Amino acid sequence: MASTTVRAIQRALKARGHELGTSGPARDGVDGALGRDLERSLTLRAMLAELGGGAAGAPAAAPAAAAAPSRPAAGGFAFGARSLAALAGVHPDLVRVATRAIAISAVDFMVIEGVRTPARQRELYAKGRTTAQLRAAGVDGVAGRPGEAKVTWTLASNHFVKGDGFGHAIDCLPAPFDWKEAAPFDRMAAAMFAAARECRVAIRWGADWDRDGRARERGESDAPHFELWRR
Ligand SMILES: [Zn+2]
Image 1: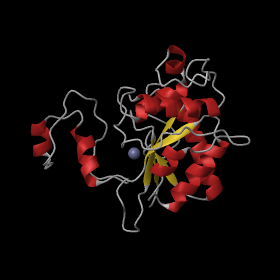
Image 2 (image 1 turned 180 degrees about the vertical axis):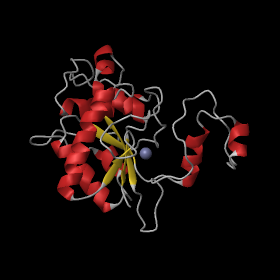
Image 3 (image 1 turned 30 degrees about the vertical axis):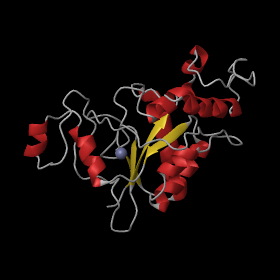
Image 4 (image 1 turned 30 degrees about the horizontal axis):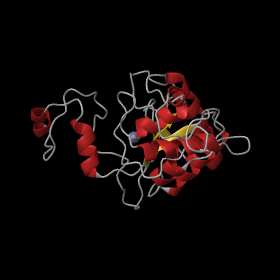
């Protein structure tokens, strides 16, 4: 990771009140180095995940231009630049729900992906499949990546731009930004559903596809995913 990127993250961490020590030219801990304390920072782990060098199973994110963490607002959290950028092109109903959810959520979370192109969906579909399996499924122009964990089971996606001109799905990652921990996803989902009720918008969660309130009952594993529910 470039030291300029590390410095930008360090400045963002300082702004959030993280103690980084006294290294660096300004003796404020902003030194561009991946120090031990900084590496332990949950926020940096999220940034690393976003930049594609992080947690196993994390979908490769689009190149992170403005990797700023969310800043706590009065009584809650708020989306940072990366989340706001990911919400571009997403249906206003879902944006309203997510924006309300982050304000009332007990756990900080980021929006890591919103609108997705069919080409990107094919790339994701290649994970955990051989090239032969892709061709058999009618997927051309992308090589299989059988060594990676499967991340999607469909070539259709509510992340695509729909007939109304908006994407209908977002993927969100809660603190402490560990893909294997279920509890933070449940807390994030609780905030999303509370916000959806307030906003009178029906949503569906990737860990509860049949919307019966019982998460993962059939092994649903797309806990970052929320989409508009249209009957
Ligand atoms: Zn998704």
